[in-house]
Amino acid sequence: MKVFLTACCSLLLLVACGGEKNATTVSFKVYGNCGMCEKTIEGSLEKEGIYFADWDKETKMIEIRYDSVQLAQEDLHQIIAASGYDTELARSSDEAYSDLHECCQYERPM
Image 1 (cartoon, rainbow, N blue to C red):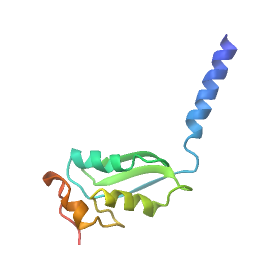
Image 2: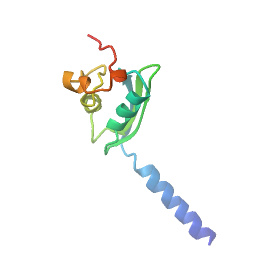
Image 3: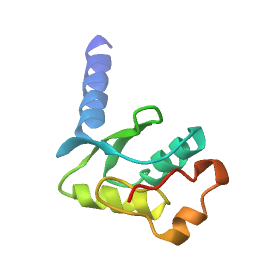
Image 4: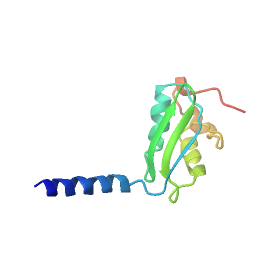
């Protein structure tokens, strides 16, 4: 029984760790204001090939762990911009920005 449980635990560990193949972690600035912004920004990144996303509303920095074979860093910027938020490399469309809740309409960089 011990051998069986050990084998099962080992298999689960391999499956859990194997899901983040080619994982790369990046950080960059994303403009936003509040907890609702955080939910929208992080929610926009709930896609295949993105393993983790955490945006800090104080520093305006996001940390993302993703599959660098499936996605390029520029793709991450475009995904976030499509949800209405400007990043260091991508500007959201005026339409997507104006669709944000009033409290989420941050001061846009030039």
